[in-house]
Length: 618
Image (cartoon, rainbow, N blue to C red):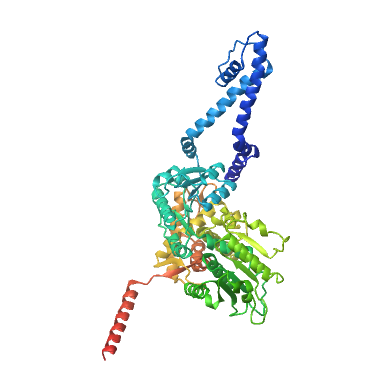
């Protein structure tokens, strides 16, 4: 309901007449002033002549000017229609112009006043290309948007204001701008500045501002340009304290784009189990985007039904292809068992590339299924695609070109009119910077997995689908139940800490999920139930024999020892399956070594070192 209201407001604010008026209102004002003078000259000329008054053109001009400041002799009667129209039109134009001028002078104060009424809005820190496009996308989705930009000379400020977003200038790492943007009432905060350190700094400043306060704000999304740093920082997403509702999500544009590119242009389309040869891909450019493509295609390959041990092949074309291959294998243990990386070390501007010999295998055939071009420069990427398209014109192999936007150069190769049917453009910013994609962060994914597991378990026990409000698919689930699953996902790190474990990003493609002991499952399930009770009671729920969502009555608001076994299993099952759905989200459970184990291990190392010293002395 709330979203539809927001959307209706947005539609009204973007009515074609409103957009026309905002673009041409000063032109209309100038036309209005000219019309007043034309009507005034005719009206005053006729009026003075009928009264027998001799008036020069300058006298008439002066009389017309007086109309704009309401200086008109009201005793004059029987005015002609031209003068009557001019004397009403002139002060209307003057009042509108004065109002616009005052609004411009006091625009900052007016904006701050309007900000006081914002609720569940989006705050975007940084107004580069990402920030500008993100603000437009959220405006189109019906959200109110507040942008914080450090530089007053940013060329995107005007476009952002014209789109209807609130714009504040200042350093978002300081508390002032975030407070002015009503952080405590916001729905989401996006940090998309060009510097990783600045983005992380803004996020942790936001956490400090709302800590210990009754705030509705929970979700902070931080863009990290470096994919490796982003992967390491993701461990911090689960460093949530017991009473801390702050959700921190780190994301990388290239990693998100790689996932979206594979979903849109799948390398395994129409793949069949009985293929005699495994699929062969070519990736041109092994930078951040190219590396992410390799990893996500490998993960997708793992999920496909295939012959045991069958690998697929990825050729990497890059000036440092050999070094990149070794680096990627080292970063992702297990990748070598899944796919074969073939380095093609050459310069794209070289004669060898234009000859296309690398496209032909030992059987003098082209075994490629798809080509991904991941180069930083749009013009260079497009010219590379055109060369490959010319070399493979008869092969009909899809060539996917990563470009910044789907505007600009992209329309030049759209369609089949010029023989470019094989070339497909993937606009990185257009495809990735979408609200529905960005908001699907780690915590949201885990919350969906938790509900999916609960639904599967209840149906297996004989419960009927839709017999309860909670026994439905995620999209149909009441918001209260969704929040409960989200809080359960937030609490995973706290539960694991009680048994000496924590969550880390998966180190390789394949992970062996650990198994918890009965005692560990029981302890974590009990901790989850206590947390659930605390959250429900704080939210106004109370104990009752029969569940009533509207009246906030629940029969499970009792201590763990008094809970029926059936209800206890609802907490135990998600705990048992925690390593599985964490692995699906790209994480794994790491068991910390106990102090005694560490001391024993260190002792063995010292003993081993002493033995080696004795051998050397001999």
